[in-house]
Length: 541
Image (tube, one colour):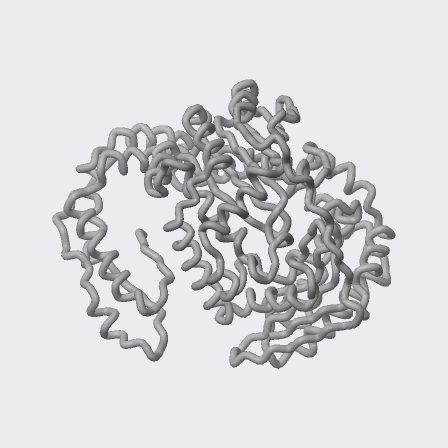
């Protein structure tokens, strides 16, 4: 099956559908350009290489090839044929598959919308003539550069892929009521490329080499990541460094990101799962920046400008300490040389000071009425800091409670039938974050659901978990961790953030050692400390 999928404001639905079919017709008539087909070939190859980084991905692929095609060498043969495809081959294939006889269209529209206007906006392409087309960590190093960049290197020789992750302090916790959402807009604009490049040219350049560069802004930090095939690293690494330290931040890209953010804010009320989380944070973190939404509010986002975005970037990235972690198959000397040459201010802003934070002094129970046949519930408490040693006990606690074999699922969903989904939730911040339980259920069962959650939290706080539960939780966490750390991007991310927060660049290698310190008694002690009904914050929608 080939499919096109879109979410769009209803007033633009008809024009989008017309534009879609116009583009399909053009493609069937003209086929791809030489640059497009070369970019597609690189994308196919890079997808297979990236998918072979982990033992999980490799075993899944080999299993599929063996059981479905009977040939574990199929991918190698496929790539040989794919490299030989021409623009004419792809054009003929589009005429075969993208035709009126095989197309089915579906739309979910408001009842008030004139559907005839939508369906009359365009017609699908007419049938075309058919033609069948047959065709392991070796070493690690931390380097403090004179320009304020802390460089962490993890050379690995197993897969020809390199991931880089840069991060700095920032994100939601330094935003106020008037600037809420600026980090989110910066991330969406930052990743569009360096000064002197247009966003479209930058995207085409990356696609042609099977690379990706993405920015983020969270609650405590912001940064820029990159993943590339090793054979294109000499092209991609300098471009990544330039995007990191001298981004274009085009005003038109800012306005586009601003429009997307405002549309996302406008539709928040329609997504009760997101809304309950938003209101929960407002109530738990009252007075602290964590109470705000990462995407911001309508008032704050509308007031932001491209100039304010540039000032925000200069303060947090150009004028502050920066951590960059690199993992994969690369030449360490070249990476050091690349980032060492970056010119940055000689005087950098110090680490951000900790903000005052205190737990709620009394229980807060908030209920919001919506005309929906479902209820969304969060029962939560103040959690741990990212630097607290107790976070390993918390990780174990959440694992005992969560998952399909965890206490919450088996007791509240399977045995009592109180909900259709239930899971523990948590967030660790520079200041204390949160820990709690999310549940989706029938509105008629919400009172029983709240009582059920309370009983399970009281049970784990009053009685030590069994040795069997503890052992299973440890094995699950370690197993999941080892699978995750097969990816270069996971190693780069973990190393960058643990270095930024002062935990040490090799913190992810110490997980087993830290989990061994967790016992049924330390788990119970943490649970009894956190799950106090006197400081609970509960949201029901």
